[in-house]
Amino acid sequence: MSPGDQNYFTIQLLEKMAVNIPGLVAVIVFYVITLATGIWAAWKIKKEEKNANQSEIAIVGGRNMNVFVGLFTTTATWVGGGYINGTSEIVYLPTRGLAWVLAPVGYVLAFIIGGLFFVKPMRSKSYVTMMDPLQETYGNTMGTLLFLPTLIGDVFWFAAILSALGATMSVILDIRGYLAIIISASTVVLYTLLGGLNSVAYTDVIQLVFMMVSLWTCVPFALLNSATESIYYTAVNEFYQVPWIGKLETEYVGRWLDELLYVALGSIAWQIYFQRVLAASSSRQARLTSYFAGFGCVFMVIPSVLIGAVAVSTDWNQTSYGLPTPNERGESSMILPIVLQYLCPTYVSVAGLGAIAAAVMSSADSALLSASSMLAHNIYRKILRKKATEKEVVCIMRVSMVVFGTAAAGLAFLSNSVYDLWFLSGELVYALLFPQLCCVLFIPNTNTYGSAAGFFFGFLLRLLAGESSLKIPPVIHYPGCSLVDGVYVQLFPFKTFTMLLTLGTIVVVSYLVAFLFKRKVLPRRWDICSIMKESEAPVPLPDIEEQIGLQINIVYINPIEIHT
Image 1 (cartoon, rainbow, N blue to C red):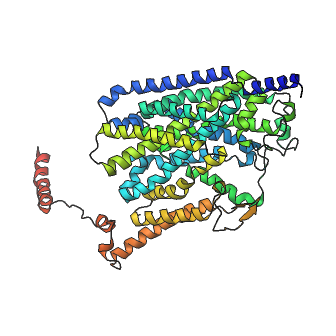
Image 2: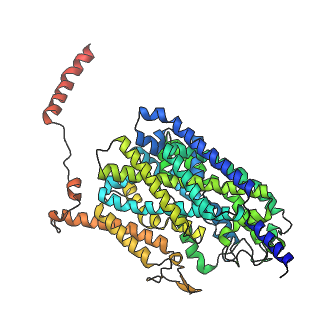
């Protein structure tokens, strides 16, 4: 190779390695604005904390959140980095397509079901967290066990969306992904730690507006790029790859329904949802917020769907990205930032990056607050230290935020597929926690024995079904289970099946154990959870003399009143 050729390739390499300075500056400005908003919100509530319950203000914002802020924070929480990046990825994948983008429809169903059935019973007793009714019915020990699935889910979700941001920044800004993850996690922890739900809610407003404007700004440039064919044509016709509209084979209907129900029902049993429900100023407002937030999630996903369709319709050989295609390189999970980088002008791709950063922060702060508030309120205050002061509880919240944020950042370095990790984060919540919540709110007389049996039985069933993303082979081969490219695929709706069996186990075991104790088939001394003492507690009756006196007074007083 000649010296001239060496100089040429050296220049090209340096150009590829150069950091996108304007983009980096824009992202820093956005982070500063977000942090400043969070600090302002924290300062705003300082006066309220002096005369009120500090921990409750941090967790549910004083229960006076208005409709506008409530709608924005609920929508922004669910429209995370995994939601935006993952939707584009699914639309782009040849084996999936739009037919398999189930999250938007699932969210609409989740918010409607939540508003219709879950808002009233949760608000009627002024609960602080989702775990309160579970601890109230099943006790603190079982409540601690039920806390674990939601804790794992929140941390996994935080990790998934941080991973999405790291992948995006590495493509558009050409910086190390781990730097983006560390900086983002630190920013989120700082303003959430300072202001609790109020900081989270007000920053969500800024982030959702920025996200909306930025993503919709990028779409026209991607659609009109000269390397892109019409997405209307490629939706139903094979051009560069199979149509992006996707198709649903008959044998996959069970799995499709399973995933839809998983998103719809599994999205309810999360503290991040009930945090907004309990923070609203009234039940009516909580319902309206829930209904409209679902449709807000649908509106916010449209740009991601269009970007995924653009990726399917692009001749990558006409771009600087070149061949092979992103799918052939195994970079499908980064398709959204790739489209922004190679099909949009630099200043537009920077705006898209800001949208991803906003999406990440709007969900990450909620997941962080969710896990830390339940740890502080339900575990520390109700179990470990029942006489804890308000300052202690708030301090535990803040320490746990740092711990959980660090753990999520570490897990973000290990994720392979953004959508898989995001989708996996609710597995345990759907299979184990959702049935428990339904029982305590809608099915009377379930008890701790049924709760424990349902938890362990459901966990065992889910584990035996296997998990391809974690390379866990299935022990139970449900009908339709097949080996595809060395990976077992369960076509049977086993997630919903597991959830229903968990629900049935809780009810059957609860009623059976109560019956056996009541009939004295089982000795009362074996009732370690004291369910019979609770059910047989004497009901206080009015004193008989008071009743007689009341009747005498009525007899002799009424005629006098009439005469008068």
